[in-house]
Image (cartoon, rainbow, N blue to C red; front, side):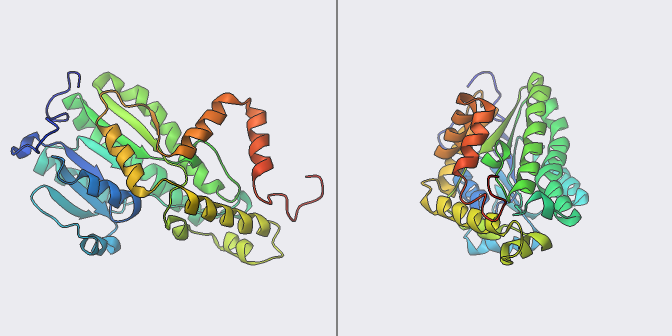
Amino acid sequence: MGCLSPRIWFAMTAPSPDPVSRPVVLLTGASSGLGLAVARQLADRGFRLVLTARADSLSRFDREGVHEDEFTHLRPLDVCDPQQRRALVDEITTRWGGVDILINNAGVAYRTVVEHWDDDAWTDIMETNVRGPCELIRLVLPGMRARRQGRILNVSSVGGMMAMPTMSLYSAAKFALEGATEALWYEVRPWGIHVTLIEPGFIRSDSFRNTRFTARSFRGAMAEDDPYHHQYLHLAAFIERMMDRSRATPESVARCLVATMYHARPPLRQYATPDAHLFAWLRRLLPRNWYHAVLYRFLPHVRAGAVPGS
């Protein structure tokens, strides 16, 4: 696997008995969904794991049968809290010598049109989905540069390369994360640090039920007299159908992510579901104005309630 040292790329047979030779993985948002699936796949692969979740979600680890041991540490982390971020990275550095592989998975999603944004939702999603991951990257980079190697995997979404109505705030955050990650790919490559965006599309799970609303977007989804009511109604049903019909699962996306970790030269963008590959292909194939016209035509009832001919 190239000239990378055993600190990162070790014998991929039995886990090393020497704790110092085991790469250190920091995984955020690890107590449910994709994060939990990744945590399970990393178990017994020869890593030292630091799995994080918000303090009020730590009990999920026990319910899911994930427990601390010599090579797995469970830690509370609000990625929006600068003191918690610093304290965690300092602890890992003191105890295990630093982070070799950072997986930024923690995130939130909002369902809202642009007109229904509010300051609290903007702050919440940008701090959680953009600033939190970037600040963790800033904290682990000095150690990676000193060792001249490292892996950073940022979990993005198809929503980071294409936008949908009622998901504007989510796409705004994911587009920002993708832009920062693309710049980072260039910046740290001279030190042998590899950066990848994991881009899943629709995943068969109940995660859409955790999508948040602003006060105005919740009213828009509930009230038939709201101008955007039909978009909220039909897009929610569309997303639920797509997720129910998807062949991708948290486990299959986790396998893709873990496989990417083992690539000697991982790509900047790793499409993690069949529909992500399809949308990426359409973006490359179609002229941009055609691409948007095609998507607009196939969005369900997006023109319902608007003026005729719009």
